[in-house]
Image (cartoon, rainbow, N blue to C red; front, side, top):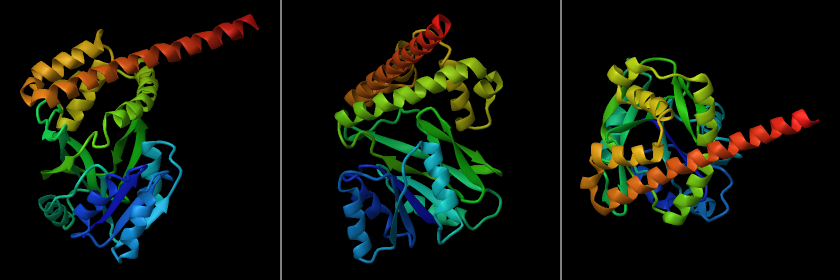
Length: 287
């Protein structure tokens, strides 16, 4: 058995289906809420009142990495192995069975699972770099998270492996307005990370060309992409033609356009942050 964390903030349309996907299997589900202002907490409390093995804790959100590390270090679980389930993701019986089996061995301390991105009512397999892996199942005393851009990167104290079963990810399930709202915030964090990587980081060509896993190669590709000109256009061409998004229909085209637009938002925020820094420097000189 393993415990399940679900991170939430204003997930009233997603938390019910998410819980329904995991509760037939798990005996320990912890919702870590960032003080939602919609009905997320009320819906969670309904499940608790009905006797389901669900707990609810709330903690102010500072960043994705800090929130995850806080819950791992602070919120007690019934089992040493944990699974991180986002509200817009679902657990499947096949994935749960494989996870339960994986927790019975001592060779690995964590497992990556691949997401199936469902967008505009279809699985967009090609333009989402499937299989694209995320750290989901691990021993809570051997993994923590650092911030990286708007998201996080795991730090693993031991060897990891990959699960065969995948999980559905219903991205943009709350509509395009929510997508634009979130990515406007995300682009600011990504811009800060871009500036930092350009100043401190470098391209690891060995990882890019012959990395040991999809995760390693994807991160090296990210570092390379930060240094390329015309990034929004290149991202669209890469996803739509090279990855094959053209075969994902209207949903694939829309996804590629949105991702290219997101890259452009990041570039604009990079310019904005640098302008602000230059302005501060000029003010200091004038003083």
